[in-house]
Image (cartoon, rainbow, N blue to C red):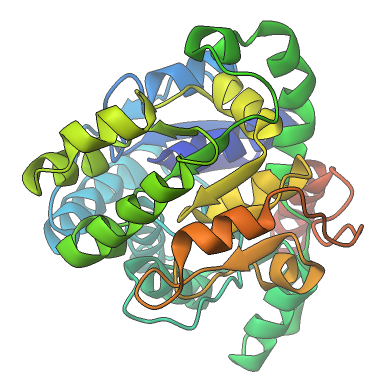
Length: 365
C-alpha cells in the first residue's frame, strides 16, 4: 500500500511550494490528496497558479473564502476534519504560516494523524502577527519539521523541540524558482504588456493586514512609494485586500496616477517581473526570498523579517514604515549587491522532503 498524504493549501505561496513538492512525492510513489481551502479564492490569486505550475486540480475544494481570523480558521478546521475522516490519510502535509496551515495542523493533531510542516522554524519574534502564531502552533504539533535554514533549526531547538523531528531540508521556494525562471524568461510577456524595460523599474507588493488595515501606515507606505516613483517607475500588482484599503481611504485614484498598477500576476509573470526589477519593495515573506534567488536587492516594508539571513548577507534591508524613511531607503538600495552565499540549500529540498516522509513512515510502521 502506498503512503497516503493529505496536503492542505490555500494561498499563493503554498501553491508554488506544492508545485515542486507534489512532483517529488509522486516520484517516491506517495499517493497525495490535495485540499484547497479557498483562502485565496479568485482566479487571479488561485486558479492560474494550478494551471501554470501543472498542479493537479484539488481533490477537495473547501471554498472557505475570506473572513475574520477566528471565523475563517474555524470553518477551515471543521471542513478539513471532515475530509480527514473521509480519506483516512497516513500523514498530513502543510506549508508555511497561513490560517489554512493552522487549521490543517489542528484538525490532524486532534485525530492523531502525523503532521509534516514545510518551512518550519521561521520566527519574526513579533507575536502581533497572525502568521507568527500560526507558525509556532503548527511547529509544536508537527511530527516532522522541515526547516529551510540553519537559523530555523536553531529556533526550533531553542523552543524545546526534539532534534530528531527536525530536518534541515533547504527551501522549496528555491527549487520552484530554479524550475520557473527559465520558463518565465521564454513565455512571460509581462514587461511588454506593461511597456517597461528590464532593470528600469521598482517592483512593489503590499498585502499584509498590518500595513493595509492601518490607515496611517497605509498612507505612509504609499506616500513613500509615490516619492520613489518620481525617480524610477513603480510597478504594483495590486492584491484585492490592498485595493479595497486604498479605496476605503480615498487613495486609489492617486495610486493609479503614480504607479503602474496591475491585477495580481500569475507565477510566471511574477517571476519575470522579479528577475527584471532594479529593486523589490515588499511586505511579503516569500517575495523577499524570491528577490534573493534572482539576485535583486530588496527592501522589506515591515518592522522585522523571518529571513534574517538575507539581512545579514546584505541583500535585504528592513524598513519600518512607522519610523524609517521609505523613499530614501528604497533609492539607496538600488544597484547594491550582497554577499554570495547559499543559505537555502542546493535546490533539492523537495526530494529531501519526500524521501524523509517515506523514511519516517517506514520507521514507525
